[in-house]
Length: 214
Image (tube, rainbow, N blue to C red; front, top):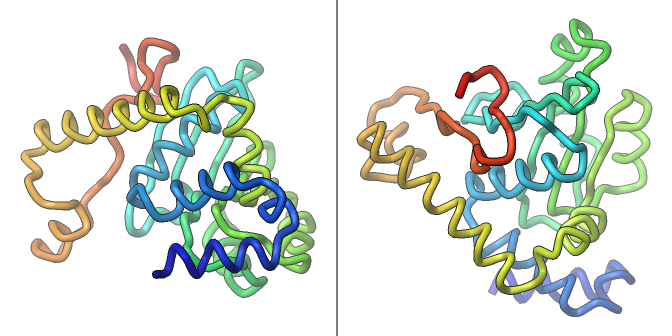
């Protein structure tokens, strides 16, 4: 029901998704049909390709300080990326403000790092201005789908292959950490923070993982 409601909102509010049915369906897929943790690994793939990262890894967990992915490009520039897989259509300035508050010290201490806000939602005009004023690059729902399309992820074979990569990586992580329940539930049961990031990237055959050898 929520997915249908969101589809109707997109059609009504965003001309791009009124005119592009396949693109709208793909956005709904990455918003509702994969988990939030899977979305981080999907975003890792997007960031790797879009920014030509040679080193990268997912680092997000429940209290990640506004940083889900870190990476370094071919010129040595560092990236700090926040991923927001939200079902809500629009992100207002108060939510952006929370992110800016979380990352304030990090941005102050790392002025040469590129900070990126990536989301399945629509950023309001004021939210975009808020991010731009603080030198944060953003990838909203339209741009995220556009990048995905350029990477052929809207092709069934390519998308299924990426989903299998994510599933395999999750199973490796669960086996190595003896996880038999969802990590969010495990955290609740143990009353402690459970680190989500995998020991290796999804694509070790392509690039080395930031901060790890091998």
